[in-house]
Length: 326
Ligand code: NAD
Image (cartoon, rainbow, N blue to C red; front, side, top):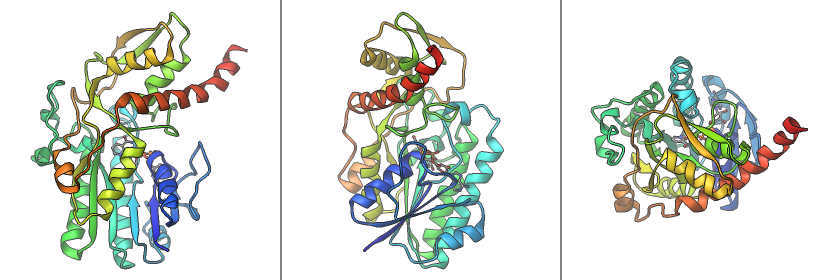
């Protein structure tokens, strides 16, 4: 039986990845600072552990794994990444995890390792035009990300590539673009825009106004979790290192995303744009390279996945609403 290690298995993508790998017949070890908040893990064993500690990392990688997925990171949505208050923690914590896990894998002769980088590593100056951003993989340098989160991704991508060159490790690097789906953080400050807007819409009463950060004209593309996992495992098992975008090409403004969710809710709501942390003006995955190298790219329309997310968040919000209104 093949064995996989998922770092960050209590988080959104890691938790879903564990379930995906179990369905494929893997024996899976998960590791995280916490269990997933929303459902029980399917992992065969699960360590609650801090990967910033190199000794702990060596204990976690105590055998040769066929596949290691490194998804653990100190991260969150715009409200966490762009305020500046968490910069030191984001850089220190995520860099330590990557340094330790790579070295632990090298020592155990575990060579196939996937690293989850981000669209946030791309230069800010190529994402000024909200209608036509440039996020081709080749546009990454000279580097100029708009956040320390993005700079840590630049550093860690290079770290993984160095282990690939110097130690012949089978590194695979994906640059994820805004992944969303059920069982993701939807409140508390680390939630990302699709979940945050779903929550605002689900909580609002008919006739109310929801607040959206920035002008609302900023654009993004959003990838549903199933397609993220498909792209991740395809890249992992290919003969190609990357880095490559894993994201959707369907670009939408944040106000239009809010309008889409209002329509799904069926409630008459209006939108008010307020100042807030927003990041770059425009961002959309460029999928030419992944299609060329893997013969695959995500294709599910945003509407299909976002309806599922809204339904799930509505269910999370309901019990809390009863508490507030009773
Ligand atoms: P997440 O925050 O839900 O999961 C990350 C997990 O890492 C969390 O459960 C957290 O507890 C864990 N973690 C943090 N510090 C740790 C430590 N010291 N030791 C052990 N575990 C630790 O995030 P996610 O959305 O699942 O993202 C997974 C990866 O994908 C991250 O590397 C992230 O940067 C990257 N990514 C995600 C997106 C997205 O849209 N979700 C986009 C681009 C890149």
